[in-house]
Length: 131
Image (cartoon, rainbow, N blue to C red):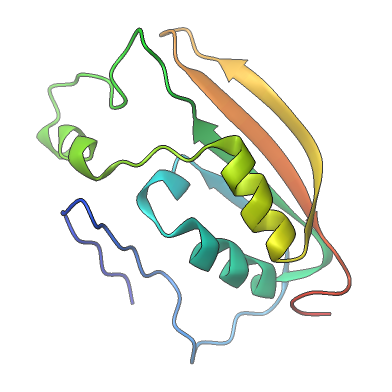
């Protein structure tokens, strides 16, 4: 069901069209949208939410002071560097609106290590996706 490629054209397929997912009230996507086709994932996420269901996202923001992937002794973590594509908050907002979401909140969170993250929350409208 899941297929991840370790190339710069990384695709993560976590959803199959033939699998029916009962609608849920909340989807939390933290630090994963940097590795997937955002438009495809947001569209599918909307189809999994009930009307007025919530999508909460955390995006890593570009930073001049630190590497996108924090240096670590874990080789598997370091392997993420070449496939990571930072998502701009405005691009996520555009994709969310295109797929029937209304933005509820957007704020910046600072980590102790000096990185910044954009936390955005969205509500699924009644008119798109599942009822």
